[in-house]
Amino acid sequence: MSFNLVIEIISVVFSLIFLILLMRENIWCWLFGILSSLLSIYLFIEAKLYSESILYSFYAAIGVYGWWVWSAKKDGILPVVKWHWRKSLIAFGGSAVLAAVLGIYFKTYTDAESPYVDASTTAFSFLASYLEAHKVLSAWVYWIVINATSVWLYHSRGLQIYSILMVVYAALSVLGLYRWNKQFNTQVL
Picture 1 (cartoon, rainbow, N blue to C red):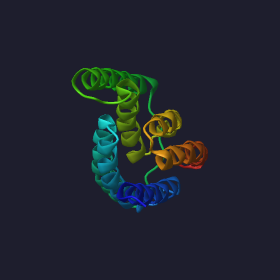
Picture 2: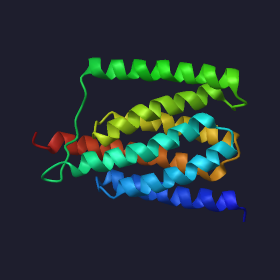
Picture 3: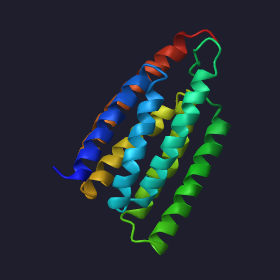
Picture 4: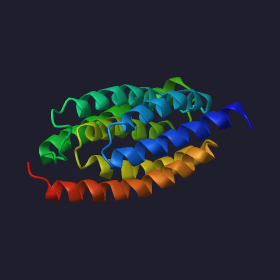
């Protein structure tokens, strides 16, 4: 078994633990997300998915931020919220612009594979990660689309285990949306 495959397997296991704990709103999700992200950075550089390596560097940082945000609540509970449509539209527009800029840069100046798809999943993952740190319900909608797109992206670069992980992530993201929506509808704000 190659070194890269071992790193990929460990990272995927940590990623699954992260997502399951996130869905359960367990603060320890952030530790597993950070560890998985740090391992993934190396793999994505090797696969020439440079936007993804930037994204996973961001994931490690947002993991620290998410842990801080979730632990800052005095009662330990951060409520699920919805953003106003204007705020959501601005965030979507900013992510689309970032995706275009990253795509153009990596297409023009690097040997990146699928630079525009890679840049789009990266830019919108920045947004979705921020949303999940603040328990904004729409984070799960972004993750469903991002994860479904990433199935193809990772498969095309020979990262089969990551591709399978994205299938699982897409399915679990649907469940996460359901769970957080149920909590949103039953919580007292």
